[in-house]
Image (cartoon, rainbow, N blue to C red; front, side):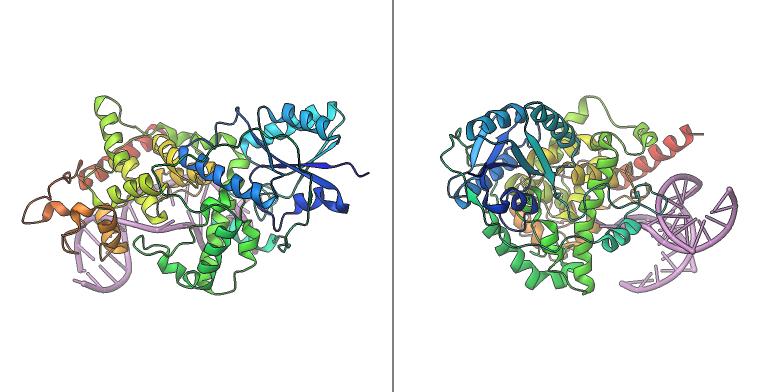
Length: 452
DNA sequence: TTTTGAGTTGTTCGA
DNA sequence: GTCGAACAACTCAAA
């Protein structure tokens, strides 16, 4: 009788194109699928992400014909118990290159080895595993464009088909995490829903992506990030579907950005929370009684700048924000309100259904000018110019700010200019952008002077 | 080793 | 209104 194998699901919650699961299921060996809620893992935190995870696990349990087991506790302890219960000495999992996952997996591997159980970490949650794309000099890339070129020429596996597994059922499970209704309206979980969206995107919007991705009023982005987060879709499955069209290459580059930032975090785990460029951390940030009030106005979408408020309200309503608007609201927090990028990054992680540590931290650092290949410090987004340029008809603004819906396309981007007076129930601009832009530039000058 | 070209997403100002 | 220059060095990656 073949001994079963345990398959430990983490950020690979799918049943097609799954090399690690394939290996666990090889030779007709029965597979016990398990998901472990690890109390030491603060991430995933955030109600929206936890709910989406819970729904994804519901889908996975059905898809494994009820065999999926959920346990809470330290993975090393849980896996030893399960191995003893089902009489096996092998555990398979997809490799995790995140700052927490690496340490955890090494410790779990050692702990299980001491109990005579072997662990097999295979594949990666990225098309190209972090650590495998290096410069001619053998160092890791810090600039995106050469990384993108090298990443493409490195290449990735062709996606494989559905996994045929003989699930080992009847093993006791603890109750699954409950998917309590959230304030935010979240996407439908599971592999079918993910592919419904992917097919829709790949058959149409991807060909307009170079323009459509910048239009928050238009459904022109893939919105696949929550599925990529949990591995419900693997990036190589999307990459395999992309052709040579320039707009497709722009989408390919977005997938590469995700991998670039995973690589950067792999090389520099500290950069999740601290400046990638240490000397940039000396920038003057505001402190004092007004900062909490400012931060709160930003969080709640009450800054008086419509494009900023629309974005922040979309975040609360959907647990998601259009990428163009993420940049605008981030720039506003850092360069108009002069607050720490970390504070904004934490708020994003609290609410984003797709919150990914690497992309989030480094996206914020790009805006703040503290990261790899960061935006030059003098690049300060003007919330009015951006709004006019990317939401010219005010579609996005009207969707999220119904109190401004009656304003003309010209006035809606800066409602305080309405001759009738500011609309009732909508705040005036909390700061003067022109003034704060200059203040931001002054602080960077001061920082540079301090390096002399 | 040295040199060279380049670097996601912008804004403002003045001609 | 449109266009190009300036913003400012600095670091990276490859030749």
